[in-house]
Length: 466
Image 1 (tube, rainbow, N blue to C red):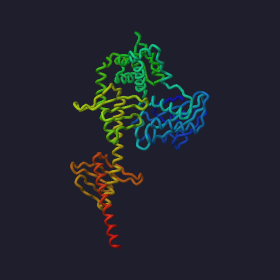
Image 2: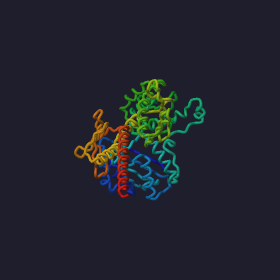
Image 3: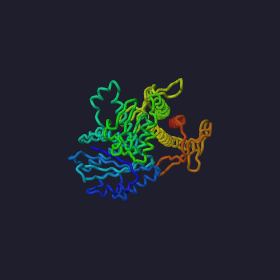
Image 4: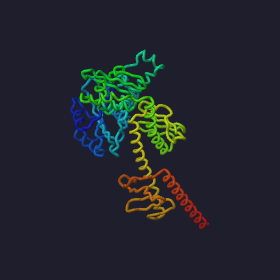
């Protein structure tokens, strides 16, 4: 099965195109609308939750090899599994089936904005992730395996290249280069943006020009191993980047490209320093997430991290590549890479954003627990307010307030939402793990005291009966 994906700005334009195609049928999804107008109106609801996201439209097509045909129900199952595998849980999507070509295929239109909370579905590494999901679907639904885009668009290593594996490590560098290029082209950048992204990740990329100003080609080098675009494959040449990878180019970009050409590549020492700096940003984030999750490991949609007591590792799930291994240096009191990391700027930015989302969700979860405990505690005491040695709690109109007495920090202000049957934060909570531990201990002591009182009353009644 061959998959293609594009991100865009207009739901209505894409829906009109898919709906008006000859023999087009809307066969699935999770939306009520049946026309482009109705579907676009539904998509608009999610878009209003995150108006700053420019490319909110996700368009994927899945095509079978020539001669293979599936029933609508099976296509819908595949579309549902593909959407889930790409991380679109909680997002709206519609599935169109087209029969205007020799290849049986579907189109999926999805919102990159989740309808419930307005968060964005990440597009980091979405091309390799898509290939991985498709390979899994081929096995699950017993479809004819189809070469991935990398297998189809990149040139296989030659015999000579294979002979140089042990001496130069060239094949390993080749695979790393392909992955770096796929990452750098994930959001259809301009050619200068693409080159800057590679340079920031330690790849020395150069575009060659003739004396008359025409492009001769593009080359890449990493750790002293160089490849021309042609050697990597048709999708990695200068025209191939535009045709197959969505890189945008116009002649007025030549000055910016030549300025990048003149920039000296990172030395091995500079690259190590760069990875040290990125490790010192990423490692504390990962360690905090693991500690907050009360375990030795944590796995999200895109990454997995593990702490074995001495080493902290980060792995990308799409290709199972280890991006970082670090250890805590007691003398310098900071995280140090124990081997060369492969952290790019997208990983750093995404993990920083991921920590923010994790902390928001964590505070939401803690608020649900803390508010339930405090409200029940006050009700059991028959009071609207209570002041203990460490905390103070009281009702303020319809809001429940929880304060730490030592510094008068307002840890939580929450209100019960009868419609959602849940506590909602009136203002951002600041509940820490220690606060939750203290609350649970106090609540358990209160419950134990009440059990003891009930048992004592039962004993007294029994004695009276005797």
